[in-house]
Image 1 (spheres, rainbow, N blue to C red):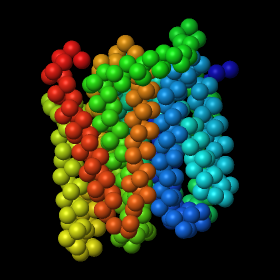
Image 2: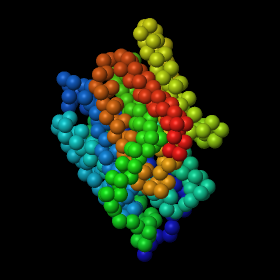
Image 3: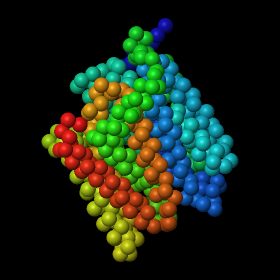
Image 4: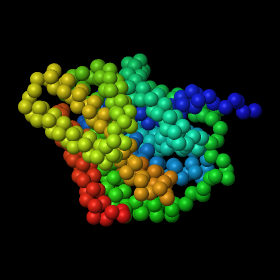
Length: 404
């Protein structure tokens, strides 16, 4: 016999924990990077940063399929299958004796975690619409923002008690808990009569249509550059605290503070985007970040005292995370706007392609880390400049071809 329906509070909590799978899987790993590098790749410690991008690449690959798959099979089966793969990959990572095996397990983890990322949003769309849906999503995101703030603290606590491998056992426990909660309490939200068959040819056709549309392709490119900036910062932030500023022990606390500050960006964006417009607001954010990143570069080259430079870096780190709240949602909306007739598939394609490109472009930035801020500051300045130029090109295209 089915238990009573979820209350609104329980539904928001469950969806927020599904959303949080991604942040927890990335941010909880960061305090353990030095220990992982020392054990698995001591001769080339920079390679350990690929533990972040490998997860993101797996997530991006699966995002291409996961939305249409849940439309065909239902939400619960896809979520539970993803949780099973995530648990298996976490156990493989727990036992990994080489960096290559660990990275392969992280790719599988990313594939498994793509279910919560995409399907949780679909469940909200299935059950709510209009202003009620917007309200529910706002409450979910308010709850979700706490996870990036506390995940490194939680990871550091686990490492201090049981070593870095125990983090993967924490992932197992987290996934089993959420999957059990979902299986017992959340009914299937997509009735059989509303399901659509999975057609790979339609997905390819949607991808080709998007790539041929200049506005969509430029918005997708700008979003990929934005993800490059974000993934580069996440990959290098712990090594910078450790190697550049000798502040590894305080890293989780500063990361928590920065995450909480950055969480306000989405609320600011909601207030400004109606007045300024999506493209104008995103262009301003990217242009400002180019300037800030170049200023940080010049200050580093000017040999500003380390204690002062540390404060500057924390402020800059906050600005990078804050910027994502002013840009990613707007860029996604710009890319989706001309694709209303294939909205579901377009959402999967945009999420997949931009995530994969962003992760791939972030890898070389992490690999050239040399114990200074320069690879990161120059890499982020370059990525933001690329996004800014893509948006400027979009304006020129739309003026030349108003119907695009």
